[in-house]
Amino acid sequence: MKKILIATMVLALSLLLFAPQSLAAESYSDITPSNSHYKTINYITEKHIMYGQFAGGTGDKIFYTAGTFAPNDTLYKNEAASYVVKAANLRYAEFTAPSYTDLTEKTFFYKDIAIATDKGFFKKSTAFQPDAYITREETAYMLAAAFQLTGTSKHKFADVSDSSSYNSAIQALVANGITAASDKFNPNQPITRAQFATFLARAMEPSFRVKATATPTKATSQGGIGYKGGLVPTTLNSKYTFRERYESENNLHVFNKLTNKTAADKLSRKVTMRGYNKLTQTTSSIVYYEDAKRFKVTIDMPYTSGLVDMNYPIKAGATTTKYTEDTVNGGQIKHVFTAKSTTATKTVEGKKYTNVVVIQHEFYFDGADYPMQAEYYFVKNIGLISFNTEVGNFTLVPGK
Image 1 (tube, rainbow, N blue to C red):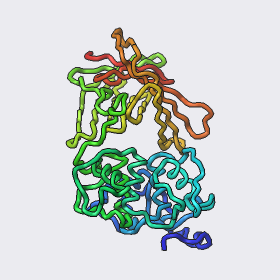
Image 2: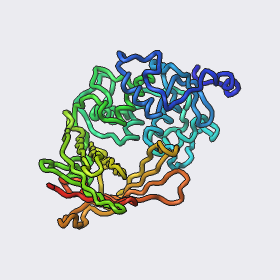
Image 3: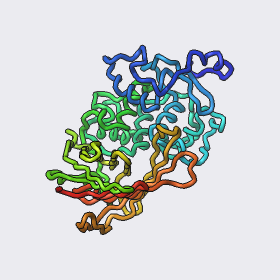
Image 4: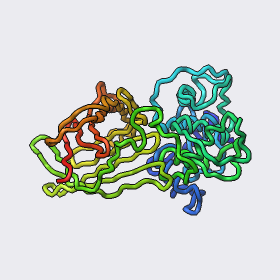
């Protein structure tokens, strides 16, 4: 039995204590590089989603047995809810108290279950059954809802009926490369920890996904800017230069195209640009990523960094909220991205641009009364042309 009584926890702590931030799949005696789930378990561990073998808990605290992962153990529904809520950066989300007959505020993982229910990760029912094993079809439904996975596939599992209420979610997993197109899906079978870790890692990180059999429904069909809608640069034949203006500095970073990668299954696209500042002898990078549901840009410069991470479609007024770990101060950072305009006009380095997409970024550190802010300007097929932070202003100079 995986859950242990609170009364026995104190006796077990000597076996359970470890430093989660140092754990990786290499730490598990029952997971070797030859295991097909090795990389995804390693990823989920490093992301602080799942650690060692589950050994119970109290409130919203989980206890683990250090040194083993127990890949073939099954998961309870309350465990699964907690892992997905963490993976989706929703630990601090507001929620409405669920009305399950078998749930109280003292129930283990109550808050995570409440958030997952409020977000629609589980089908509506009278009872939640937190101690029941979660099945593969329930996992499919939860992941499709949590990561907004859509799409259909020509592949048909022999044991999944078209009339099944879980069919669309299972099809979305196939279409997005979360699960392989095998003969059977085993929908009613409890999912193992290794299988769950792999599904979750693929939902979080597209590079782990298997080749999909169909392209997901594009967000552009909903209106607004979507996948391949132009925010990721396509005109990358010439050299780019970023001018940094902050305090007394006015430096130039020369960027060249490094990679322009479209996945073989055409589900995602990534463009990486790197720059070099001759004056300071420092490097910079801008990395664009997009798939059918997401647009992301990360900026790394010697004196500042930047981030845009929005859900598609992007329309004027659209807002996306996400959370990241604060690796310096601890806790989490709340990020709120808002599309202020998709038709703005802006002049940068003497060149006038129209139909500029303006995205405002507000980020809150734990305990802060007000957010810090940044603003980003994008032009179709060119990408980022300018961004302003509290540190300074940064502008793009194409072709110099």
